[in-house]
Length: 175
Length: 428
Image (tube, rainbow over all chains, first blue to last red):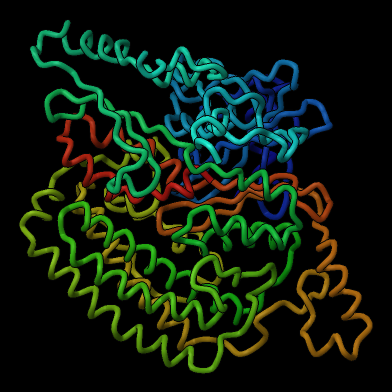
C-alpha cells in the first residue's frame, strides 16, 4: 500500500503534471490511500497512474453523497500487481449535470480500460452518471424502459408496480 | 380477427414494443461491411440464446450472430435476476446485511459474507481472534471446493458427460452436511459475523471433516481420470477459445481464468488476509489459456483447498471464536442472566445495531471466480450508506465475446461453461 507519504508524493506528482486543481483531496484511511480528483482530468490521471504501475482497474463503482453537493461519486479501484499496491481514485460530479468522460476507449489522452465497459453502464444505470464517449451506454441491470436511477439515496424503496403484470387480469381468465 | 399484434396492445411501453419485433438489421449491416460488403456469400443469422437455457448456467441471455456455425459476434444481456440487494442492504443494520449479500453469488456464500464482513471489520477496526480466522479459512476453502464441484458437474453436463454431475453433487453433499453441522444451514449460512464466527464448531465436526479430506482427493482423482480419458471432452476443451493474459488483464478478468493463461495472480498469496499466510499451498497455473487449462486449473485448485483445510484443522488455535468487543458482538447467552451490562449491549445490538465510524473501504478477497471486492461506505449511522460488490462473474463475463469470436457455436457452449458465470452474482 502506498503509505501516507507515498500518497502525498503521488498527489504532488499529479498536481505538477496536471495542474494545481487536478487533485482536490487526498485521504489516508485504514491503511489505504485515495485521491479525489477533478472530474475533467479522469482520463489523464488514470493514464499517469497506469504509467506508475497501477495497470489493473479492479473496480468502478458509484456512490451517492446525498444531500451533499457535488453529489454523485465515481470510484476507480486501481491495483499494481507487481508491488501489490492499491489506490482509489475518486471523483464527484454535480447532480444537475452528472457527466464524466468514459475511460473505456483508447484516446489521445491515454489508453483505454475495456474492463470499465459494463461497470460504467452499471453506474449509469444505478446513479444516472453519464459517461461521455462510452460506445454503448445503456441500462445494464434494470429494464431499458425503467424510470429513475434506483441506487440514488432519495430513490424510494418499494411502491413501484410489478413488471409484466399490466394485463394480468385478462390473461388469467375468469377467477 | 386474429391475435392482436404487439403494437395493438394497450399500455405496452415503447421498449416492449421494440423487444417484441426486434430486428437485427443494423448488426447484420455492420458485420457485412466488416467482412467486405457481404461477399462471403453466407447469410448471417442472429440467434437469441437464453435466458432460459440449461447451458447458460443461469438466466443469461446471449445475442449471438452466427455465420453458418461460426460465432461472429456475441452480446451478453443481463439483469433478469436483479433483485436490488445493494439497495436492500442500505436499509438494514450492518449485521443484518450479511444474509442478503450472501445471496448474491449463491454458490460462494461464505466468500460474499467474508468480503462484506472484512470491509466492516476494517471500518470498525475490530480484532478478529485467530481461532475465528482459522474457522473462516476452513469454511471458505470448503466452499471453494463445493463451488468448483458444481462448476465441474454442470460443465461436464454441457460437454455431454452426464454421470460426473451426479458424482460431483455427491461430494458436495458431504460439504453441505459439514456446513449444516457448524451453522445449522446448508446454504446461506450466515456463519461469519462481524468480529468472528457465529458459533464454535461442534463435537464430531473434526472427525467428519477428516473423513471428507481423505475422500475428496481420491474422488478428484476419479473425476480427472474420467474426464481426461474422455475423447469428446478433450476435443471440445483442448485448444478452444484461448485468450492471452494481457487481454484478460485489460478486461479486468481475475481468478482461475487469469491463472489458466499463465498469470499466477491470487490474492490469497499476493495480499494475504484471514491468516492465509500461515498455510502452504500452490497456485495452479495454465500455459496457453484455452478451455482445457481453465478446466485443469480449477480441478487442481480442489486439491490445494483440501491441503489448506487440513493445515487449518491441524493448527486450529484455542481461544474465543468471537471478539470480546461487546460493542460489536453479541454477549454470550449465559451472561444475560447475571450482567446488566450484557443485557444493555444485547438490547442495543439487536434493536439498533452497532454504529460504524464514517469512512469508505474497499475490501478484496479471492473468490472461486476471481477478485471479489466489497465496497462499504459508512456515514456514521448503524446502517451502511452504500454496499457494492465487485463481483468477479460480472466483470469476467465481458471476456466471453472476446473468447468466442470466430469459434464454433459448440465451443461457445464449452467456453460459457469454463467461464463459470453465476448469474446471482452478475445481476445481484
